[in-house]
Length: 259
Image (cartoon, rainbow, N blue to C red; front, side):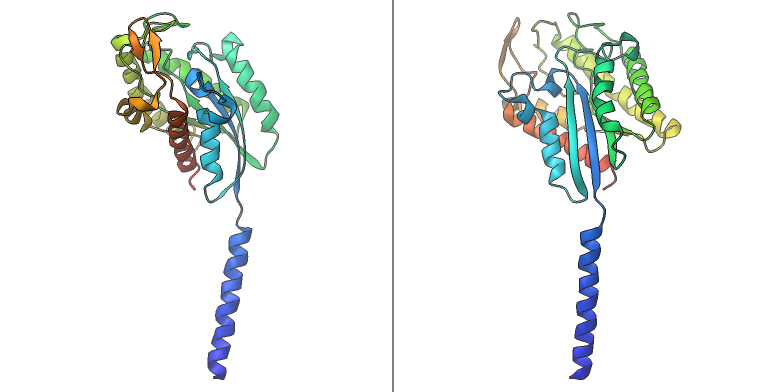
């Protein structure tokens, strides 16, 4: 009996040590700047500040093990292209920088930029710089990312694939099938871009979500039904779709952190 009690105490002590270790395991705190267009902004949603994909991505991250406090800024701007985010224009890039500067000094948290751009670049006409060729898209994204890495030496960047839109999309800008084809041509450019950064900036730039494109292509019910010049089109996720997209982004960010 004494031997049994002795080993029982040992097991109890080991268990307590394990509990204390689990409680003291450091959690990763995040400050996220979401860069994007109207989809990121949450256009058409009743409460974008709570329903847009960035808010939903943060909600997802807050439920995951190893994640501590998460702060974020939604810098999605309707109609914008990679051209609008070029640092030399001193417009949207400067706005994103101002948001990042408010959080950059919090060195206990990882500063992370989540980027989904390309939808408006792919338009046939009607947006700044459109149509943006795949080669120019890569050059624009490179300028944007290089500038972020230089300004914030410890930051991380996650680049998501733009999601699908219907081939009859035609609102204030003209997209149609030509635009959708162009949008799809950006994906290989993003993949090549990530490989380039894996060499020149290891551990800092990551491929984000790649699954949402096909998900939305197969789920038109996840979109707002919008009247355009070529009929009802699908471009902006509805409330349920925004939640789905946010979860896709959240998963990709979580994976990029290696948790």
